[in-house]
Image 1 (tube, rainbow, N blue to C red):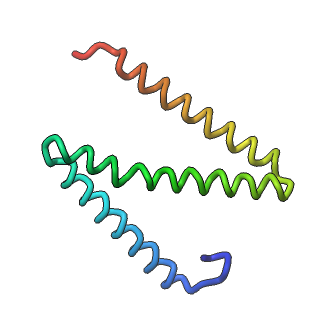
Image 2: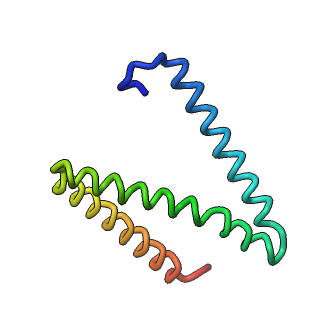
Image 3: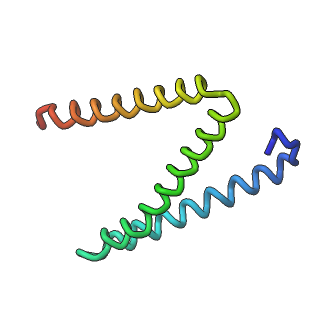
Amino acid sequence: MLYFQWDLRVVAIITLLLGYIANAYTSLMILIGLIPLAGPLIVKVLTIPFFWIINSLGYVSSAYAIKKGYGSVVNSYRMIAIYISIGIIIGYILGHLAPVR
């Protein structure tokens, strides 16, 4: 938004509104998740399509960037994402291997 030279107050208001909407959605999912047995299933049904949409947008934008000639940039960012994911997985495993005191 700053790239398109929008007013800073408008940018701040939009950011705050999106933050409140995300917080409300998260709170609603937590409340639904507290319902015994059915709650976690309902939350999965409501959240998995959202991640599919985000993932598909990533693939579409990557394909468009590759078509425009930015293949090496896309490749380097994909490798960074893979390295971060591997680091998170290794950290999770090491964190659960540590003895509990």
